Length: 35
Image (cartoon, rainbow, N blue to C red):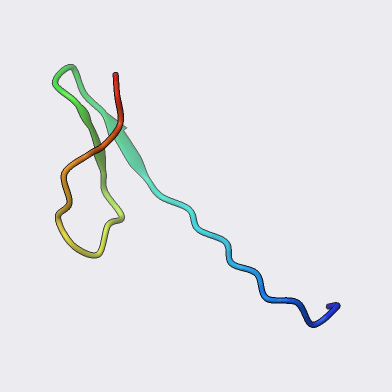
């Protein structure tokens, strides 16, 4: 409430044996997470 800009993001992530998948992406993007 101090007038400064801010943002908050949350994602739903599915962890599989192959790779993590972000389920809440607006577009299909390759994962950059290192597992």
